Image (cartoon, rainbow, N blue to C red; front, top):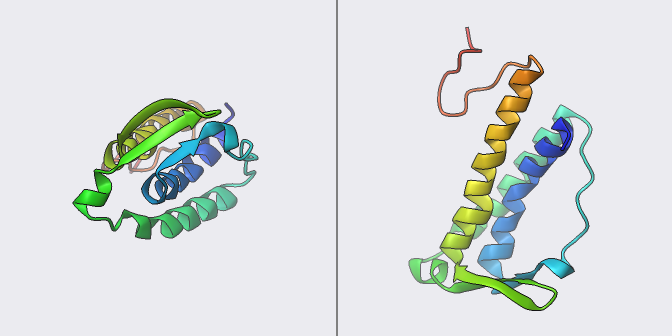
Length: 125
């Protein structure tokens, strides 16, 4: 994946929040085609900010709602069923952490200072 493709993917991950927390299932066969790679840092950051803001309200759920089942399917065949909370943690949070780590390595390999993720980095003054 190119640097822009990876950054675009990271910026799009929060959109799974609505899919998981507002639906009972999702079929990968019905999903939209792969998102086109955004071509500028400003476009990627704007998309990330807009997606995050749009999906943040979906997090306001009761414990009971977060524990209801959510099913992932592919072409009508069940892949797995998990509590929504577990699906959100896996598909959104862990996925975001994984790709954010890849992105930080990609940046460093291209001599681009890595921003603080968990606190100051060696790239900061």
